[in-house]
Image 1 (cartoon, helix red, strand yellow):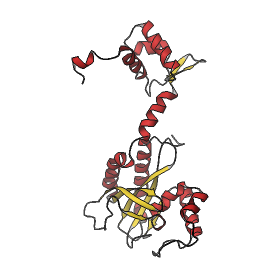
Image 2 (tube, rainbow, N blue to C red):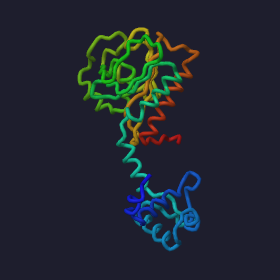
Image 3 (spheres, rainbow, N blue to C red):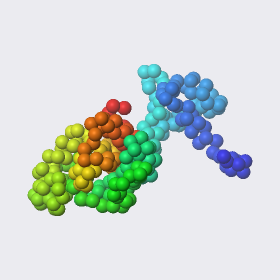
Image 4 (cartoon, rainbow, N blue to C red):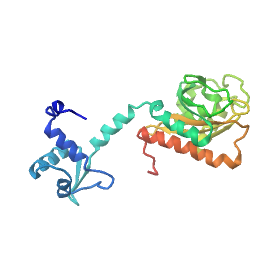
Length: 262
C-alpha cells in the first residue's frame, strides 16, 4: 500500500484511465458510456475525455451498432507480451506439484534443445523408488516419449535438418532405428495429442506425456508423469491421462495459449 508521501506523486489522468479499464470484467464485457460512468467515480466530462483517449490509443473499441465499448487489442497485446515473458518452469512448478499430489506419481516438465530434451522441473512422489532424473538432465529426444511429443511441433524440413542421417544414433531397446520410423511415430503422436510411453526408455517405467503450448500455439514444453509399471493399469489410465492433460492445459493457459475450444 502506498504511503501519503508516495500518493502525492500519482498522475490523476493515468489513474482515471486505469480505473476505467478495470471497470470491464467477465460480467461487463461491453458497456455504454452511461454504464461506464456509473461504475467509476469521476465527473462525467472527465470520464468522457478518458474514454475518448483510450479509444484513440486502441485500449477501448467502440461498437457503432450498439454504441458500446469493449477492451481493445492494445490491452490484450500488453497482457500477452507479459505472459510470453514468463518462464515455463516458473509457472509450471506449482502445477506439477499439484499433479504429483493428485496422481501420486513423480511429475516433470521438459523442453527441447536441438536433439536433446532437458528436464526443467520435477517433483517426486512420496516413497518413489524410481531412479529420478534431476533438473538439467539431458536425454536424446528420439529415445523418450517426452521427446517424441516435443517433436510434434516441427515441420518435415526441420525434422530432416535435425536428423540428417537415415539411421538414428544409439541402440536403446524400443527406440526407432531409422528416421522415417520416428517421423511416422511423431505424426501419430501429434494426431493423438498425447503419448503413453510404456517402458520406452527405462525398463519397468511408463510415462504419460501431454504438450504445453505457448501464446503462439507452438509446443513450448511437455508435462509428464512416471508410472512405476511396465504398463499403465487400464483401471487408472483414463484418470491419469486426464490429470496430466489438465496440468498441461493449465500451464498452457498461464503462457497465454487460447485453445480452439475456449
